[in-house]
Image 1 (tube, rainbow, N blue to C red):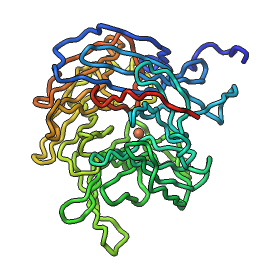
Image 2 (image 1 turned 120 degrees about the vertical axis):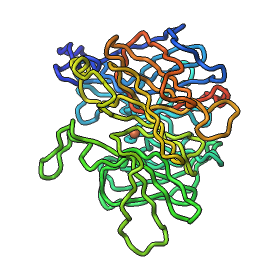
Image 3 (image 1 turned 180 degrees about the vertical axis):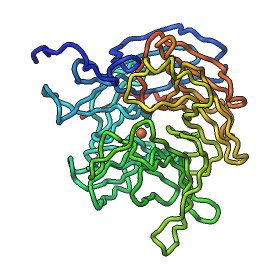
Image 4 (image 1 turned 90 degrees about the horizontal axis):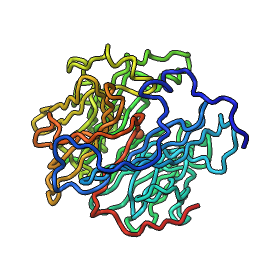
Amino acid sequence: MTSPKVLHFPDRPQFSAFMKPCRVEGEAHKLEVYGDIPDDIDGTLFWVMLDPQMPPFIEDDPMATYALPNPTANYGLSKYRNKYTDAVRFNIRSTANANVIYFNGQLLALKEDSPPYAMDPVTLETKGLYDFEGQLPSLTFTAHPKIDPDTGEMICFGYEAKGDGTPDICYYQVGPDGGFSDICWLVAPVCAMIHDFAVTENWWLRWNNSFPGHTLNAYENEKGNIIVDLGISQQNVFFWWPDSKGSAPEPSTITSQLMRFTINPNTTTETLSDPEVLHTGNSKFYRIDDRFATRKHNHCFFDLMDPSLGTDFESIAPRLGGGYPLYNALAHLDLLTRETKVYFPGKTHLVQEPVFIPKAGSPVEGDGYLLALVNNYNTMASELHLLDLKDPTTARAVIKLPVRLRPGLHGNWVDSGDMSSKIGVSTI
Ligand SMILES: [Fe+2]
């Protein structure tokens, strides 16, 4: 491969200020901690972000781990490939930059246009594309699989499952021992992006066309109705893809709310009832206590944008860069009391998706901690903010990272006790 002639990133907001490519790989030990990390936290936050690695547009996407209680950060590189714009030829094109899960002893970086990408969970060494020991029936794998908390099964699907542009969808389940079951092929009416889905004990769901965001959770209630909680926007969140008439919303006007659909599976009408607005704020990146996935949940955690909280937008505007939605607070919504508690990290800070950490030994939903990456636009560096959900309005600990990390998408917390020793993975 010859060296690229252009050696700088394009002069665009998505490559400038806080969004300037990081291109960092390494480890940092003995991170600065303000406050205290509870003794019962012992695990690793696995996280992915999108990061252009080489100018002008060729990307590798770093994977990061943050281990607690001994605060250590480890950054490694996974892969990004755009088959339609590649200036050079790559042997493997998996992007692997949307989510990262730990399942059956394997760390898998996910993006829905390919099989998972296997990595060493300790060193972040890239192993390669992973087809579940030859069992993967689809060419693609969802970025948002669901784990049944009772059986340990992973519920998955792939769209464009027979190749680019195909309407085929493949549904499948992976047992905790890695065996595949319930493989089911469907043909969608059109080929379309299906980024997330909702699963209950007995159903998986479809709804008419809209711009749904990520699902919070779904379950079947005592009346047999299906409850689906998710973010809904009335606008085209992917504004960079105009509709068939060429129109697209102004990005700053796009909002999303957490809503609840209650669906009677025995109904004879095809028209769903209007959803209930669970929270009126502009929100995104919804999470629960994952031990209650596919079951009734009462605690919701998400990012919130509330300008009234006091973010100094005038100060941070030149430092934001572009291409990433802005949220300035973390929210905890208790569905039993309908009370929302808000954590505001600071006037020059914005937040990323939170993850819930269960309190060791406690089976009680929501009894634990919330951990999120926070962008500090004053120091132009990243931080981890840890909230004790006994009082989520203040940080229990702030862990300063010695680097600036572009905002990522998703990640997951893995308790040390759940980390298997069988990290050997056969790859494609
Ligand atoms: Fe996602």
